[in-house]
Image 1 (tube, one colour):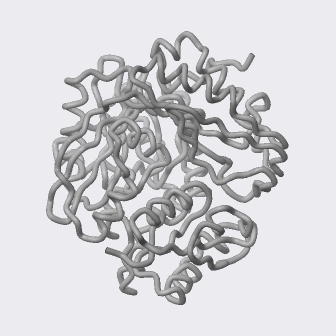
Image 2 (cartoon, rainbow, N blue to C red):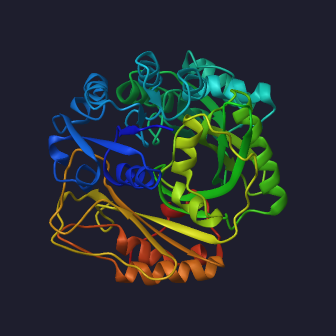
Image 3 (cartoon, rainbow, N blue to C red):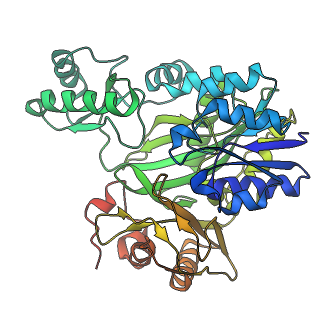
Length: 445
């Protein structure tokens, strides 16, 4: 087992990793930018090293600075968390070259799933259902128009190196194609320095359901049930839950088997997530694989009573997984608490938290790094915490979440708490009647 782990991340995920490491008797090293000097993860780690200025490129994305911090502290492993360098194959390779264990998959595994075209081709060979569409990158508007005629409208253009909805356009008819194609390529180039786009059939009334998996170096892979991430705004998740209210035992078995096939196709080693789109007829299609821990991993932890960070560390250290497939025993819902104004198009709201009271009680979990007096910097993602409610049934979990949200007090900034309170009382949400398009018509009262 590792003696010292450096966490190449910040905020709540850095604190989350530190807590598990402490329980496992592993020393920790925090890295931080000058903007995060007063962050709790810096205070809770055994050691802390400043790695640069506030901008991510100068700190949390600065590989030489992170590697230098690992070497001067004698860390024997690096946990990347999520975001930043978590799915960066170059970083994984540099760790490998320097004899420092990257707590995640190998560079080759990251590359095979990081490019969406390559991932889709791999899934087709593995027999995993994929959304109908082209087999490669589009080279021209004329090619896009021809392929759309074969696939059938509506179609969606996606950036091959994309994420977060960037470089993505839905095209409903041929007259829209030229503008959509040009715009998607330009946005992809600006966001990812790669203007490659491909086409898929647009799945109407979709659910976004993902399967948590774990695999070890001995060839064993298991799934740990599903999460429903359909409540999202502009392709950014806001609420996640497990089990999905749309799920059936038969569908869970089919999707679990498909997820294991997908991970087996690249001999996956670590924890990861296979993301699917599921249509109204419960047909499911591979969307992408995230080769890292997810923001919403807490939901799975609560419904199967399982520490996924601990599992991730143990796999990296060479320990085998049990190989058991898990089914949810409880119902859990997670609300992402963002420093955003839901009454003003979710505009970011950085600044100083003047008053903070976090909820508690039975069935309530809060993963957060903020405190009264903490100044939220404007340089990073606006998520400042995750509120998780767990109960025997979905209705009870919603009621617990509603109660916990009503107790949550954050003053000095705007947050998404009012949005979540209204969502928990929405009749369609409470009945499980929603798709990924739900928030397009949801209005704040």
